[in-house]
Length: 81
Image 1 (cartoon, helix red, strand yellow):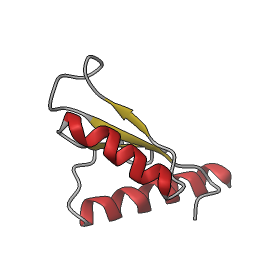
Image 2 (cartoon, helix red, strand yellow):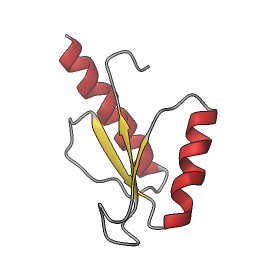
Image 3 (cartoon, one colour):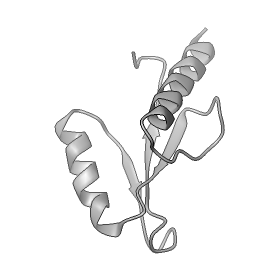
Image 4 (cartoon, one colour):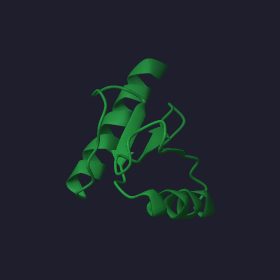
């Protein structure tokens, strides 16, 4: 039941991001939802904006990924609604 809830939450979140125009990576049904930022200076700002709204994210930038391939990762759980 929890796995089904995680899958449903992740797919809903992924679908809404795509509908809003975000470039979303990763596999469908995965609770890890990577979203491309494509700008090194956006990473810290985006992370702070999320934190201010109570959303914990992981930002990934250079040297882990090439410059201009910066991304943010959302991790969904069954508790998200």
